[in-house]
Image: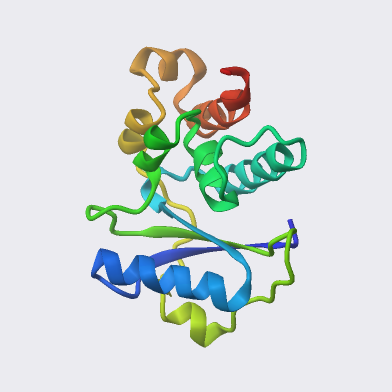
Length: 170
């Protein structure tokens, strides 16, 4: 999607509260939707693009659960219907690498943040998406039996399946 920028790396600010405040400021300065996830639980860029598409569709069809598009993206990316459960793949004190989603807001005028603004919130490490299978399995409730039946290489597909099924559990 041309209206979404994905960045992977380390948070530029170590203090959780200051980091979240910096993200909020970036969002308010640019008008973009900004969401951060624990990169160890993101299986691919497709995972995030798909979640963003589903969240946009939910808003356009007035089927969104969250009032905030960023939270709705997080909800879909987590494969969870409930916002509280979706936070499990968000940024926490234990997060070492982050996946940062910056998306032009379809509702308001927005502009891309410049490189210096982005460098104040993320140190891009060049590793791209490199998830931790054990953490993904826990976050998405994937059993070892399910993974063996599907083939271990299919873990990203199992996650995408959960993203796709979020709206079916109403």
